[in-house]
Amino acid sequence: MMLVTGARGAVGSYVPGVFSGEELVLTDAHDLDITDAAAVRDAFRRLRPQRVLHLAGATDVERCEREPGWTERSNVAGTKNIAEACREADAALVLLSTGMVFDGRKEGLYVESDAPAPPSVYGRSKLAGEEDVRRLVPRHLIVRAGWMIGGGVLDRKFVMKILGRMAQGQPIQAVSDQWGTLTHARQLLDQIRALLDRGHTGLFHAVNRGAVTRFDVARETARLVASAVPVSPIPAATFPTAVPRVRNEALRNLRLEKLGLERMTGWKDALAEYIGELRDHGLLNGLP
Ligand SMILES: NC(=O)c1ccc[n+]([C@@H]2O[C@H](COP(=O)([O-])OP(=O)(O)OC[C@H]3O[C@@H](n4cnc5c(N)ncnc54)[C@H](OP(=O)(O)O)[C@@H]3O)[C@@H](O)[C@H]2O)c1
Image 1 (cartoon, rainbow, N blue to C red):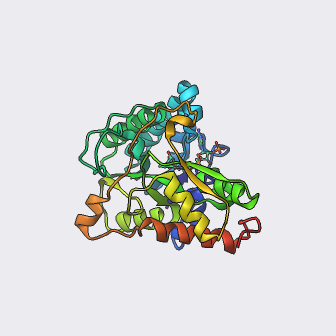
Image 2: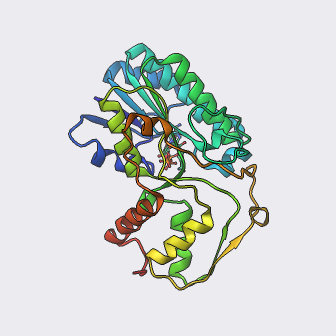
């Protein structure tokens, strides 16, 4: 049986489809609060999971910056509770982490062997979670993702926001001097399943190929939905944010490439897949 935390979030919404045929226990903050150590211990003793897919956590990076205590409780203490319970139950643990563990000064794509040095509260909390998982759980997979695309009605991220503006005919300004890599949530879970089923452990990067700026993503999104709204580039410095600015958080899936196990597509195909999914579910608000 696989226990999933944070299952009703954007990534979690793809779990039943990707892990169909597997016995799943899907939980969220209401039925398994990861910050409650006793509740986590009880749940593991009762359910005896063989695998745990740990998706729960504080993911609003702006709020994380303003509320480090809240962030620490979920992403550090909560993840440690899950890791300790996995160790006791001898369960394999998958932790989703982020390219925001890097300081952004590298020229080129970050690989698994690059040293992390996160400038943000969120990045530091995810790195602390990684370290506890590595230390406490012998059978662990730590998978770093990039700018997530997916979730449909649950999506509060960049692509959904700009689709909303395009549907209203409002012009888009998007940052053109910060680089990252997209990660299609369903593809990411497919990739994780391939790793788990083959018994791989350790640290992996899993993103859609190709470094992009948000301007690139906005322009390609406009093309995919045939939107005529103007899309213009702006420097990050003009866009106010509490989160320390990082010039580059783009990742390369070097370990997956070396193993010949890479399932992630290029970023344009991933974006087209997601727009197609939104279209199929009637979530493009009148855009074609
Ligand atoms: N989104 C990205 O761009 C991105 C990129 C890289 C890695 N990741 C990682 O991927 C994972 C999943 O992200 P996501 O985009 O699916 O995030 P999400 O949509 O915010 O989902 C996270 C889920 O965790 C739940 N949760 C929060 N605190 C909890 C707690 N104390 N106990 C139990 N559940 C709790 C949330 O429930 P409530 O909504 O009720 O709070 C939510 O359903 C996270 O670990 C995130 O750090 C995300």
